[in-house]
Image 1: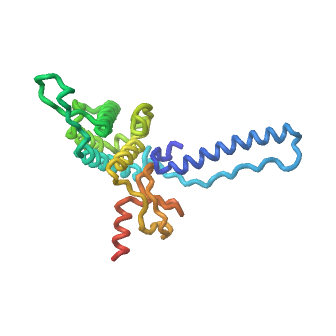
Image 2: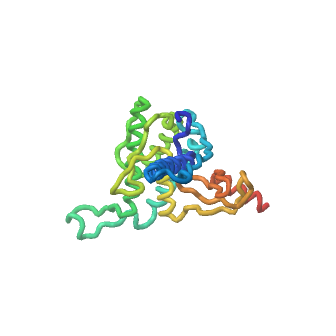
Image 3: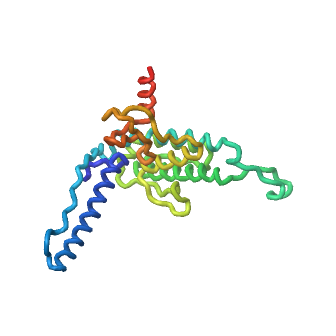
Length: 251
């Protein structure tokens, strides 16, 4: 399966195949029980092999997943800047929480921790990618908004080469800060986009646009793929394309 895209475009196919493998194991157990009981009557029916369509990788990620990751990274930077600028993300210290004679300064609130964690993960990804690509890149110190934006720009600029690296992943706390997990780069960018969209109340849900595959109005937003996905035929449509289709239909 080396020619299959490693990105989220094949997620549904992977889940369907994994479900089939589980059904096949359950069928083998059922056959063993049937034989142990004497093998009378018809044997347990075999599971149906699913008909799956796999998007090929170019070499590891297809053009769709590369475009998804590039868009998600840029949106993540924009949303992080918007979230960090909100009142309360950085909270003032009280006169009781600082040493007498020192100047007051802000401290991170719970919301600010999200942006801080995101920037740290961006910098680790930049460092790991630079080492794997043998680039003489000096990863900046600090976790300011400027550092975050410059790191996103660096990753977007190197994205095609970066997504061609086998095994490159991010250990991330985006889903649970207490239990970091390893995510592929595209899945990691989409997970952060989804989290920040929820924080700023900007997550899409449904669009009245017609599916370009079947023509039905069954497009729902899939945070794990970064696209609207048709519940009727499984066709993927980007947020921009959905908006253009609604505008065109409205005249």
